[in-house]
Length: 268
Image (cartoon, rainbow, N blue to C red; front, side, top):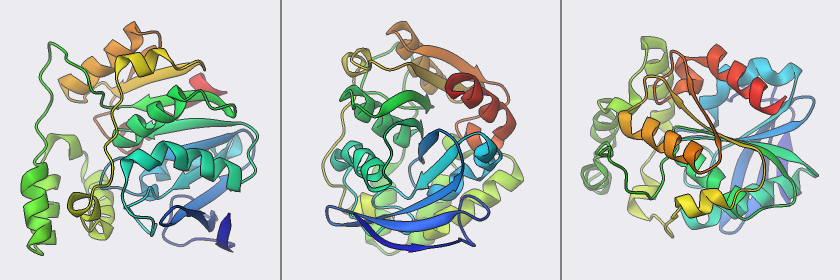
């Protein structure tokens, strides 16, 4: 169900994007649509919002771009709940009347995308995940994320200290203009999911093997060793693999042209 709509957005992902709120259990999701052609639903990474996909606006001449604020993030009012997010993808597709769609997710959004694809939804055409984590044991050690410390800062009302802690992490590295965009998104991030996380989301290599559509597991060439190892493990499990030249963990932001070329190759 679409709750409300407006014709344009000033602080969004795409110039001239059409913004609407789609009702989901517990609240709504802010969704932004631009372009024409086959539809791509974009799922942003943790602590970010739909503005993460600004570098993909150039794809609007080939695709209908659909960027949403996931529950618990950005301007969406639906409470954080990873266990609901795979179903949210189907809810957004239904509300927009999409018979078919592609799905692209970064990092935690990529994990949600994998979970959605593993359900073998009828409307999904192709899948691309970038820097996605998995619940898997590999020879490479995962990078440590200071979740407990960030949650303690959020509980104590020290939101700016929480944001600065995350900005010092290797997963948020990038050029000055990328860090400025990150800071703008983090200014909207209030730690809701750290304080009331909702249900967990577990995705394993067995789930990856259940994906029936053509799917790509990518990582930035300069992403952390563990994220690159996870992408390689998914390639061994049957997905197409690859690295995005010049990209770190936030490849869609810090290597937008290379990311867009990878998306065109996978989805066009």
